[in-house]
Length: 65
Length: 65
DNA sequence: CTAATTTGTCAAGTATGTTTTACAATTTAT
DNA sequence: ATAAATTGTAAAACATACTTGACAAATTAG
Image (cartoon, rainbow over all chains, first blue to last red; front, side, top):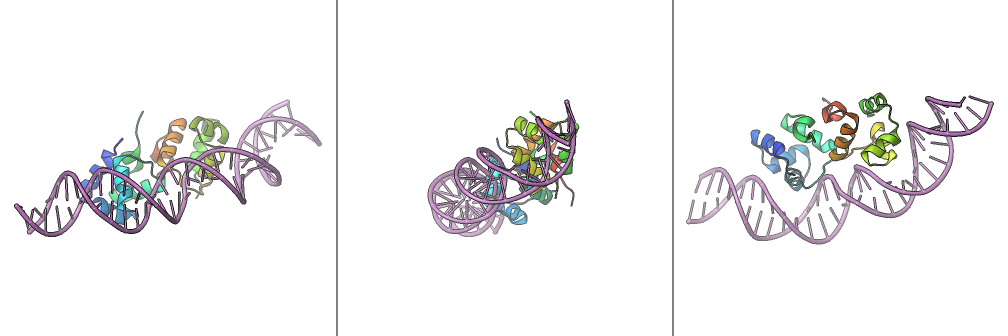
């Protein structure tokens, strides 16, 4: 399932996937794939993304159920 | 760095590394390595661990700084 | 409308998360 | 003190996260 919270948080900071990827130190395709939801990033990458966007793990990656 | 919050949460439920590994569906060594802190699990595994222990991502895996 | 930026996607390769088997060290129970 | 369970650790194999390069579709800017 897509990660729309990530997409929204990135949009709120007016960053392109490329710009976020650069800040986090990964490729654009990796950010794209995470937003698209077709894979399972490492927690360190999630943490780096959260810090770049001023969010926490629970805010961007936690899901009840 | 070691994940002592995970170790404590597991202890609080009186689960061995093996028992937690079984509930989560991974090997005992994987749980051991995560507690020891020498690697970087996927976020889905972190979520499964959190749910098995009644915690959230922020409680077990988030770190300020 | 046109050009430029952004996004979606694919394939092949590399790095690393995870498993399996195995054994020694430590802790807990009898 | 002894046995049983738990934990720490290591190496080889396997699964998959992540990269690189490339191109078309869609969106935004001029």
